[in-house]
Length: 260
Image (cartoon, rainbow, N blue to C red):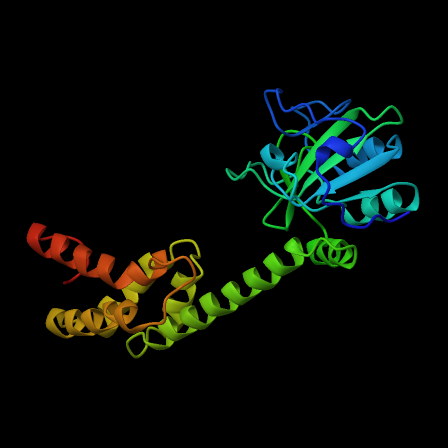
């Protein structure tokens, strides 16, 4: 059975979430130091009588205006398939509280698990850290079809951000001095030793320090004329020309290393 959004507040639900725990996320029966797995997640859901999904972070699940749905039976089985994760987890824990919050309850209405989604692509609460969802988009679509549209809207927004960031990254690579495009591509993707290779190639192609400085200065001016990135700031890779210029000054003043 699939639920519809219920905006009546947590007071109408069978049990109140215990937020006094040391961790907001938990799964009874799953050790906190165990790696997240789909099998562990499904073991918890197999014993569930009801799952409540609240479009809020754990500390706001009781908010009266927080949209929520309640599922049971086949709805839980569908959710179990959609919550499949990449076994082993990411080895990390996102600093944000996460949302929506997923409350798993037994037949007596007791909370046996509390999970959160992170960036609509990961799940926390089953084991020692976050785990990537195998299909976050499908889960967002499933929630949206039941009235919880926040995850779907967030995924669309993140996709737009990624497209903007990629457009700017490609523009920065194309703005590289002649002959440095391939090395700039690697640097923009933060490949291992990419900036070292970029510096070596720049020194070989432009052995005259004055010419190299002029070209790097022009490239370093790219951020001032580029469209803003979501959230503001300058991507780390775009500062590569400035770092190369700084390194040139350091090496020139100390008289060793690459020419320049």
